[in-house]
Amino acid sequence: MRFSNINWKMKSLWFSLLLLVMLPSRSAWAQVDIGGEWSPRIYNDARDIGDLTGIPLNEAGRMRAETFSPEQVDLPENVCRPHAFDLGLRVAPDAMYISQDVDPLTRKIVAYHLHLTWSGDQTIWMDGRPEPPDYALSDWSGFATGKWEGDTLVYMTNHLNEGFLTRTGAPRSGKATVTTRINRFGNYLTITIIVNDPAYLTEPYIREASWVYAPKQVIPPFPCELPAEGSLVPAFTVPSNMPGKYPYLNDFAVEYGIPPEAALGGAETTYPEYIKKMKTMKTAPRTTTKHIGRSG
Amino acid sequence: MKMLDGHFRTKAARIVLIAAALLSPMFAAKLVAQTRSNAQAPATPRAAATADFTGYWVSVVTEDWRWRMTVPDKSDYVNVPLNAEGRRVADAWDLAKDQASADQCKGYGAPATMNIPGRLHIYWQDDNTLRIDADSGTQTRLLHFAGSAPQNEAPTWQGYSVATWGEPNEVIDQRVGGGGPVGQGGPEHPEQDLPNPPQASVTRGPRSSYLKAVTTHMRPGYLRKNGVPFSADATVEEYMVRFSDPYRNDNWLMVTTVVTDPQYLIEPFITHSHFKKIPENSGWDPTPCRADQPR
Image (cartoon, rainbow over all chains, first blue to last red; front, side, top):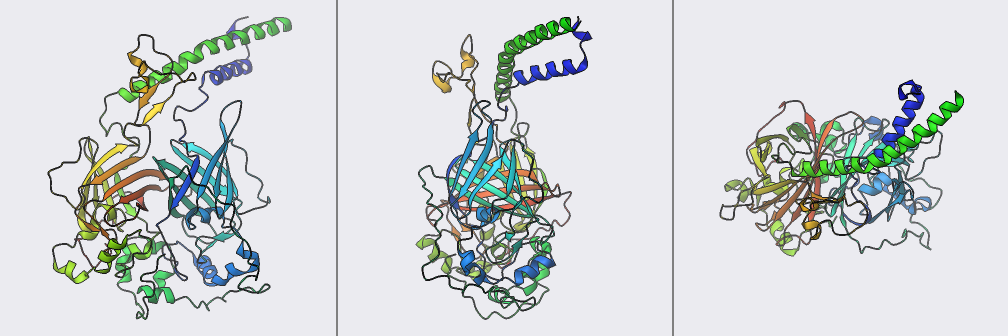
């Protein structure tokens, strides 16, 4: 029997086998080593209550932000609540440790694990496993699957608990998906976080943060303990503001001398043209500049 | 016939496996050779580019809004790792003095250029030079892929930038097991000099898809428009990547900026900025340097 007489299924099988054996076990664009200890260097951002600048919030997102009270984080049930992982990567200056699971037979990376001091762990599955169904439980780290694009690790996270975009109450819904891109530049690690939230944003919200390689860093256990005297806010209360009753609405704008509308964010405010527009808008008289000299 | 098929299948499978086993090292060797050949191929930096940053870009200010979209108040140096001398200089900032002098470009120097809201036009000035025109302050940056910083030229606002694709002289070590020296002298003497090269390979970049630029020779200026200083001893490292977001398929340029300044900073100051690609120069709005304006 000649090879040409073999049925196509068998030919395909053999050809696939041949390719499989011939292909090197690692990509010619071998992935970059992102593992190890990373010390945070987050010099971007430092927000006051009422500062929603630069966030492409929609009306619903703005309303949720205005009902936020900073005392919410002092409730007993919230004191030790971790940051959702997308927030932890960005706003808390978190030491990070990255490790990987390698299949002992194929030597392929099955998963990365990111550990942040204040946000626990996030597993990034690299083995192409399907995401859980919509009704699966969400948590603070979500479900993440990743792949290498050249020398960038790109992963998408969903099934996240509802959380915040900032520590000052800008909301991020449980419907959001987060695309995260990890780049290693020598001894710097920059992570780009792209949040797409159909509930509260009009367009994806992009932020970055950087770390410096610190092989001798030791990350302590999650350091939070409820104080013996209890939390600052008694249990069974829910500090919040009713819509339209946000006491901080103008505080930030007054303090920084910007139009109140600008302080409420929105996609338009993120473009350079908005600087010209602000000159045509009303600004409240400045009564305080207490932010000056704040260490951040 | 079934027996024949079975016999054939077993025999054919064996042949395929043997062929694959024989060809696999050849394939790997070819791949290594190709990689090595690519690394050695004479190419201009423009031809060797691992990412295309050319075109028009607009900054999207989602972070540090209050420091970028406005001129911050004097002494607002929150988040900048200034030392005592840096704070003293920042506290002495005098806007009127800057306006009265010819120094209105102090806030538009290389450490700040990418953070100022505005548009960029990026293009190859020649095969070795990537040019970045910024409409804010009408500044031009030249990223030199060849040559080194001139020692005798006067410093400028944008300084002298040396650019590479990834880390310069990045070592790509692909030795396949064994772990012994690649050549007689180790990785510094790659194996291609040997008469019978082993299947190991140590080559040098470029392999990374990011652009690295290191800028020196700058006139002293401001990290922020409100007089937060950097000195003539400052060095700026920038790392640029391009990507598209999976939600809207917009193309983005992301820049990580690391400013090191032994005179005014206690440690490197790292910031980020990102730009969305736009189809043409709509909105291009060149401005003069203005000390009292955010752009």
